[in-house]
Image (cartoon, rainbow, N blue to C red):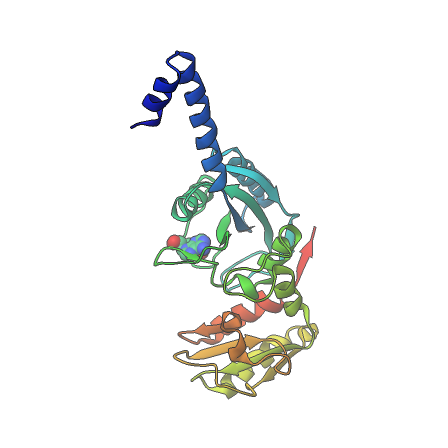
Length: 280
Ligand code: AMP
């Protein structure tokens, strides 16, 4: 028997309908609250009035009916990644609670990017606004159109710096280190880079040397992995950190596998990992 009919039998008054309606409203609100997930988004751009674009994007997201409790980090300046990237970037991050499913959220982020005039002509080219979904609670998503946690966030200072202001103690799924610890690893000097894979190690060393020669403060120490070979089906495998503290294969999430190694890929990864970021 339906609950409403059952209660009507117990108390055959019109008031019981009001009581049931209110109870159902409260229950559906509670359900909605229960499925709120904390999402973390990395924000970047280097075309136009980026601080104004970022502020407008955060306001637009905060106004969304399925988004609440939005917090935004300070703005940071970072060196651009990629030979075609152009001027220094502005970076920030925001976290919020949302009931949107991750794919709908991604579409929403892309809508906000587009409304800021984003075009995708050149990969890693200059852009008005870039919104990347970094974390979606403790969920793991792996599909052609969406990967969460974002596959590259953990070695990018310009993502971790702003994010560490907001959720320093969050340990992303699959990782054993918190956001703050991941950020701290990238500040260690000398910065230890372990190399494996099927690429020409001498060539990789040459790329690193040229990268470091541009700015001695980068202090990168290249090591070959001391223990297990971390390459496995990768033309280049990189692991950042101290080999004495942890072997490369101990934490697979901190191993970067490049399917196709090119000097530019390595230079971009290094720029993201050790390039300067400044809080404004
Ligand atoms: P970009 O142009 O660099 O912003 O890359 C956007 C593309 O990456 C889109 O086609 C997305 O479907 C895809 N993508 C995969 N995972 C993510 C993610 N976590 N956040 C944003 N875009 C993603």
